[in-house]
Amino acid sequence: MIKVCGMRDAGNIRQVEALGIDMMGFIFWPKSTRYVAEPPAYLPERARRVGVFVDEDIEIIKKTADVYALDDIQLHGHETPEFARQLNGTCSIIKAFNIAAASDLEQTKAYEGLVDYFLFDTKATLPGGSGRQFDWSILEAYKGETPFLLSGGIGPGDAGRVKSFRHPRCAGIDLNSRFEVAPALKDVDQLKEFIKQIR
Image: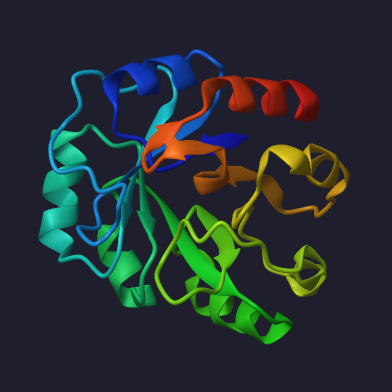
């Protein structure tokens, strides 16, 4: 499964969706340079629409999910298991975790059975889009049941590493800042070549 996150431009959305990706992420965190303030003229019709939120009010999340017809909600802040429970039935839920050491995986246990996917990202000062990778071998310590997406600084030169990465719960990858020509604008040719290499 391939998710491309941080989209905003209608033409770019259309081109990236045409590459056959599975999920497309839209960031609804106002502090992000990829923030989506209003619906683009085109939204994906085949790829799943993922809304990314950071410590947002639950009613705003639900309203945004309706306006954008989201398929998935990605919680990328400090949302509690109870918060995730309250969103059950709204959309599928992805809970992101910042990873720097095996001990960071402990926090996933409280969310087992409450969300559909985990997303493992690089620990950074601000949520998402840091362009830096964490040590993927840390994930050997993940023994949970919830499938996960591998995120954090995956770039055009990482096709070989992605193909050789093995974990029974890895459901796919999340691509963002390393494939950009500007914030929220993806290099379609780079993405096309990368996807061809990993498939």
